[in-house]
Length: 266
Ligand SMILES: Nc1ncnc2c1ncn2[C@@H]1O[C@H](COP(=O)(O)OP(=O)(O)OP(=O)(O)O)[C@@H](O)[C@H]1O
View (cartoon, rainbow, N blue to C red):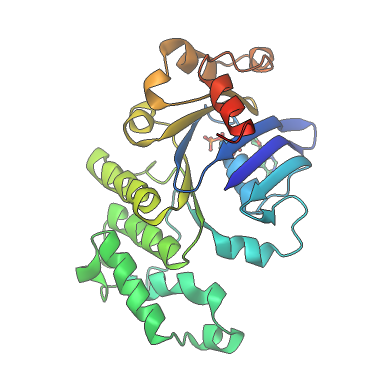
């Protein structure tokens, strides 16, 4: 579903992504860990062209996100969830979720917010998926932070995406709300076959929810493996502060077989 090779991105002299290689299969839940400034958000933003990578290969399904002729097509296929949910407070939860369909309706319908019955049914279904069906007609600003983030997930699901990118979606939530949000994202990957790439700061949540953990340090992948293979040395490498150490190739014994297996098509 996602194939990234030798991806680079600079901001001026700042080399933020320095040759990222990464693959994700349909329905996989990937958690990206890394200290602040490691390049996690930049990597996600390259995946839906909010940021344009400098060089390398980045394929999202059958679309090329580096030389993409149609960014709108890419964004229909790739939904994004942010730390600060970005819902419209004065709209109901249902209307917020329906905005996830705007990319799929005509310009006039989108201006007038005219939605098909099937879209409304889909929006209800997406709210039910995140346990908020009974809040469909509540104004979003009457909901808790965790509920607003779940509205954001329902809106992403209403897009019927192949990929959901979640940039620190639980950073401002209490542990119970955070776990619920991550559970719903994992359900989306398991039940709907959506590939989820989720940036997190919490190693414990990554271990609990991820199918695979990717450790990013100074713009390079330094760990790529199953959660139960993430050891103390890997965590130290992910959260190191010396950029030159990150320039070494990934030393995790789990990283290479996984990438090799993918390269071999297994
Ligand atoms: N639009 C931008 N213009 C210039 N520099 C940027 C821009 N966006 C990010 N950067 C720089 O790129 C580097 C990586 O930032 P990024 O946000 O990708 O890191 P991150 O790992 O997501 O950090 P955090 O966990 O704090 O969100 C940082 O040095 C940051 O200052």
